[in-house]
Length: 113
Image (cartoon, rainbow, N blue to C red; front, side):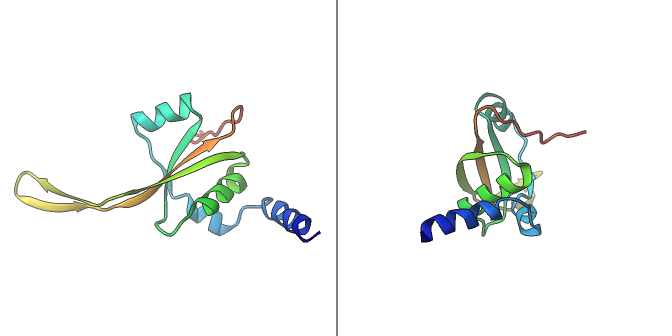
């Protein structure tokens, strides 16, 4: 009985997206590899905050975009040192990215006009 109550409460929370859900999806990562993943494997790659976890990202995608998420993979991209012109040192900051697989048959349009 208690388990059924939890399932009903979880279904009620999936409805509307909150401000926190929009904060979890910072921006899409657009490269040749991510575009190939999007077209052939129905996966979307986005930049997320360092504090985000798989469950939060999955719920945020389901609430914001209204799609069913199958799987979420998370990767921490390390910061790198760089040189510009051989003389000036700089740093490329690290970030966390998530590769979200959407259910087959559903689509997500990141490039709305």
